[in-house]
Image (tube, rainbow, N blue to C red):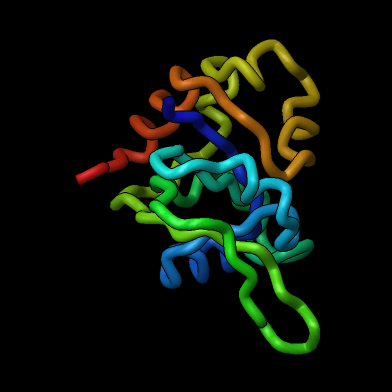
Length: 141
């Protein structure tokens, strides 16, 4: 059964993930990777252009499918070894979160909608996934 997930990362980190064909969440913690299974769909939302700074983005910036294989650690040097999974990212455009706020179950009627994204990684419904995928013009081929 396919599950749907939202991850939060700065746009520059998302670009690196797309180029490398992987996902990692919550600063490389392993627990999110343990929840993912092959075939699951993920969407990255980027609050800013760079981690903790840069211009405000507040958009869904990548969408993809978790591939077969187990989570793995990746040595980024300096003792930082985040846990990752391989992902096939789809062709898609960025989509601002603002027009979607009244449509998504996790933001609808929530004046403080941004708090939801502070979790860094959380499940979303299939309907929410499809709404965001449409806004991104995602091509899953």
